[in-house]
View 1: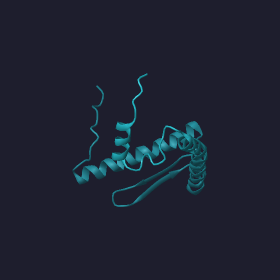
View 2: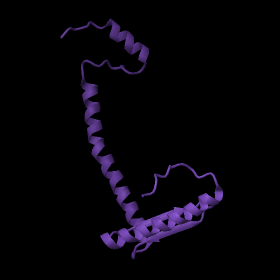
View 3: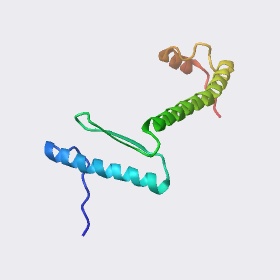
Length: 125
């Protein structure tokens, strides 16, 4: 007979919560070690307890090297996303600015926009 499903909610009893944290922390550290050995992956794990105590695990390379690599990757990814979207935004703005269907001051006031739409002739397709 297997174990029942654990409900994911905060454990109210302080002692039980601390015991569970300790057991799960060691299990998490063990899993981090296993994935690093089995898959030859670089792993960095940082856990803070409720009291602020630090628990960490990193593979053979140091934690600093892994975090530096993470920062470089995330920075490069942000730059890539920004540079990819800028030409698209500029193209879309040029299309809107050059469109004869859009009045020059369209979008400044929603009530004015609705009045203009009511006054505009309606074309039936």
